[in-house]
Length: 119
Image (cartoon, rainbow, N blue to C red; front, side, top):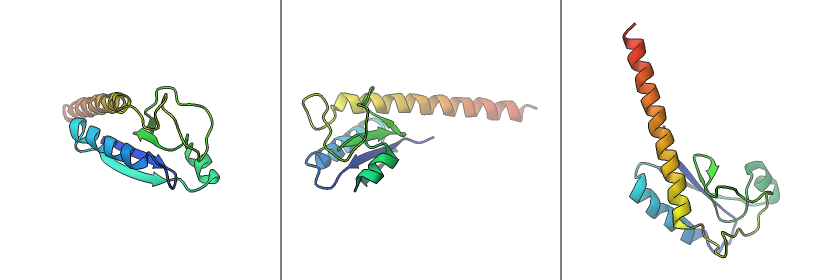
């Protein structure tokens, strides 16, 4: 399974471009084959449908990079401590966890295929 990264932003997010550039750097360093999608959340209805926690939000394989994301949804700005951009270490940790999970899935699939071939 590949790694899918999504950056969710609202229109006019002042931290969107910085977050996208940071995510691109982390992908290049840790998972060059990962896909990156930017999604613009336009209104409260879409925020509710996507579980949008504010702009910018970064998801790795559908999981928020913040270990315990704030409850609630909305189209407003998001803070990571005092910053408007998630810390690089937070994105790296989420990417490493996704890579590890992907490797475990690949190993399980390899074992399963080997078992089927020996029957």
